[in-house]
Image (tube, rainbow, N blue to C red; front, side):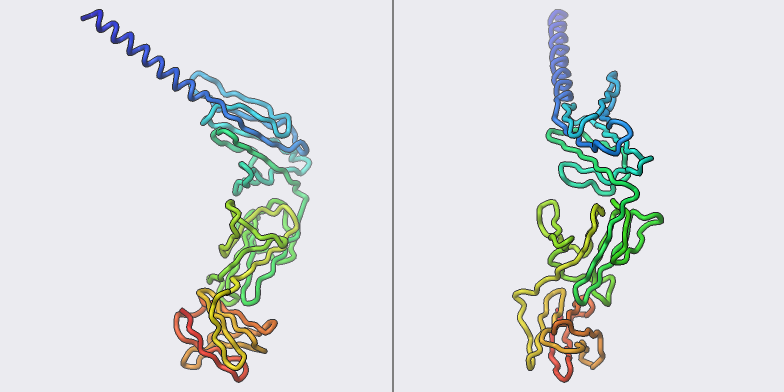
Length: 301
C-alpha cells in the first residue's frame, strides 16, 4: 500500500511539473512588437521595459533605431518611454497604437500596454513654438463652437481664424443657431475638405468631433440632404420636413414660423432662396411657415 502511495505521489509531482512547465512556456510565448520613435528632437534613446515577475528582474532595452522590432513575452506589461529634447522645445504630440491615435496622449513621455502579436506603437513629437490656424464655418441656420481642451485652466473658447499651439486637443460642436443645446441632422464633418471618418471608415455624424491639431485646419459640416422627403408647396414656396430639419425653399427675404395662435416662434433671412430651421426648436405639431404674403402649413413630428 505504501509503495502504491509512493507511485501515486511521484506521478502527481510529475504531472504537476508538466503543467507548471506548460504554464511557464505559455507565459514566455514571444510576440512581435514594433516601436516607432522619432530620430530627431530626442535627448536620449527611447527605452522598452518589461515588468519584473517573481524572481525575474525588470528587463530594459534601448530603442536607438526608428521602427525597431522586439520579440516580447505575450501578455506581459511593457513600458515604452521616450525622451524629447525639452530644452530645444520638443514635446510628445501623440502616441499611436496600431495606426489609431491614443486619446489625450499628448505630453506623455511613457506608455504601458500588454504585449500582443503584431502590436505597433508609434510616438510623434512637436515643438512648443509651432502654432496652426484654426478656421470653421457653420452651414446656414446652425452654429459651430470650438474649445481648446489642452489649454491651461480647462476648456478655452476658440474663435475662427485663431492660431493655436500644435498638438492641442480641439473640440468642435454644431447646434441650431438659436439653440446651443439642440441637435442637427449631420451628414458628415469636413476637415480641410476631407470627410472625417471613424475607425471603420464610416462618416462621423455626431454633433461634436474632437481631434489633435497637427496642421492648419478649416472645419465645416454638411447637413442631411433631406433626400426622399416629400415637399409641401404653396404658390412656388415649398418646405421639406425631416425628423431634424425644416428647409424652406424658393423663398425671398425673411421666412418666419408661427404657431396656430399666430405667435412668431422663429425667423430666418434666406440665403440663395433657402432658410433652414432645426425641428428640435419646436414641439411636435402643426405650424405655419410664412414668407412675404405666402403661408404654408407644415407638420413637425
